[in-house]
Structures are given as C-alpha cells and as structure tokens.
Length: 132
Image 1: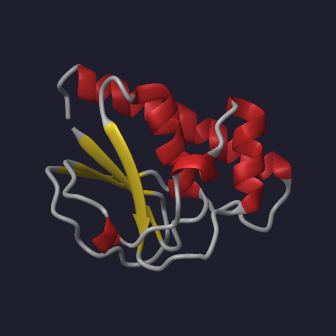
Image 2 (image 1 turned 135 degrees about the vertical axis):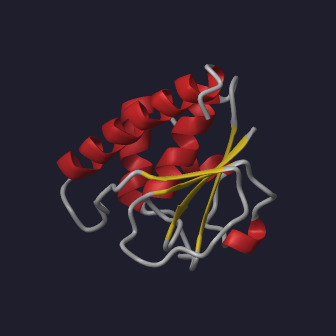
C-alpha cells in the first residue's frame, strides 16, 4: 500500500508527513510526497524541528518532488493547501486541512508536526484494520 502526501510546494507539511509515515507506519504503508510545484530545498525550519522532535533527518532521504515524479499510489492525502489539487488516480483520498507553518514560530511547526503524527497514526490504524 502506497500513500502520497500532497501540498503545493512539497517543502514543509507533505515532507513532514512523508517522514513521519516512514518513521511510524512503514510496517503498514509506503510513504511518498509531492507537490504541484517544487522548492530548491525542504523548509529548513521543518528539517530542524523534525530532527529535534523525532531524530529524523528529512534531507537524508527526501527531496522536493512533482506529482509526475512519484509512482502510482493507493491513497492520496492532501495537506489543506486551499488550492485546487490535481487529480491523482487512487482508491482513497482525504484532506487533513493543516495550516502551513512556513514563516511562523517554532511553536507552530511543533503543533503541525504533532497533528501530522496523530493523523499518520490514525491512518495507519485505519489501513491496518481494513477500513480504508
């Protein structure tokens, strides 16, 4: 089962979700992320916060990718971009409605990371239970 986490620039929320998916749910699903546009680097505040909270170095295994750069997926999770997301073929789609913490204080990044953590664990449970 492959899950794609999608947002506009694939530099912050979707990257955090991919990293937490790999960290917390690799036994249930494969995580990837992509965007409709890319940035030259992953958001450096997100990189720092993920290292501090979870010991994850996102820059080691991740980069900003376009939708066309990822393999076919089973589940698409949009981050709450407030833009029209293109349709990716999948069997399940949901939106997590997360505010972008880019340019905000560390507390906002931490709140976003913790929300993503809970949502990844919930997604893992639903996939494992066969409700998705």
